Amino acid sequence: MKLQWAVTRQVALNLFQALAIIFFQACSFFSPVVEVNPDKFTDQIASKLVVGCFISPQDSVVRVSLTESKLLYDTLNQSSMVSDARIVLYSKSDSLVISDTLSGYYISPIKSFVIQGGEIYKLIIKTPDGRTVNSTCTVPDQSIQIKKIIIDSGFVRTVTVGNTPIDSTMERYASIQWEDPVGVNYYRVFGELSQSETIQLVNNSLKIDFKKLLFFNEENSRTMILSDKNQENGVMQSADGIYWTGTYRGSVIRQEIEMNLLNIDKIYYDYYQSINQASLADDNPFAEPINITGNINGGFGCFAAYNMSTIKLKIK
Image (cartoon, rainbow, N blue to C red; front, side, top):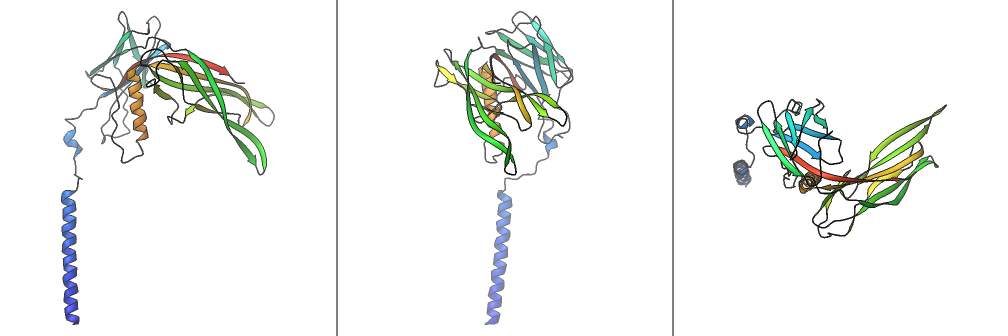
């Protein structure tokens, strides 16, 4: 009986091992993981120029970012900036050569060159190695007047030492309203807090000035992009930008909010929307790949335009 049990047990073990081998071989056969030698693709895939340029009638300079894309297996410590390119911005009657500043940007003062609402502009870039990319954009007709800033209060945060409160600060919200003109329109909103405060030292006080961008929870960003879809031709209001009053370090002596409303073209809108979607998907391993919308012929990136209005409110 013992011999029969031992034989039966051995047969079962052999059968289990055989099934396990078959299972792992099947997994290996159907596995989607394939060893790839990236060197095979170097002749088929070349990096492309990546352009970033946004023009406006309110700007005093034109700034262009010029880099090149990197393949996944490229070393990250290599600079992607492209220098010594010839970059020219064309209007219907004039041109502006944009100079390499060796700072990662090509920058030129506008001076007599005119950027005007409703006009079409063309950007042409040529690199020393013979690559050429180009793009066009149309500046929105007008800047949109901001009707008012709306300030609201949130919760108070108190700093204590032991049970003794030593300072407090309040979360506050700023939004803007404007009249949406006829037609489909696209907007970008951002705001900035300017503050002066004093810090008490041992024998004297120190004055500090700083600026800080407002944060928009709705977009999880320092800016927000929106369109007038489903609410054209009426009063529009932005989401709340968050800032803090008070200071943990001293006394506030001056505080001012600046809100900016950009009337942007559709290329600008689509580009930033795709970037926002991609950033939201960064931490999600199951998210679908997001294509970054662009309009650079022969490359990646965006050449777009806006028309901006600004309003300021002195709080203190």
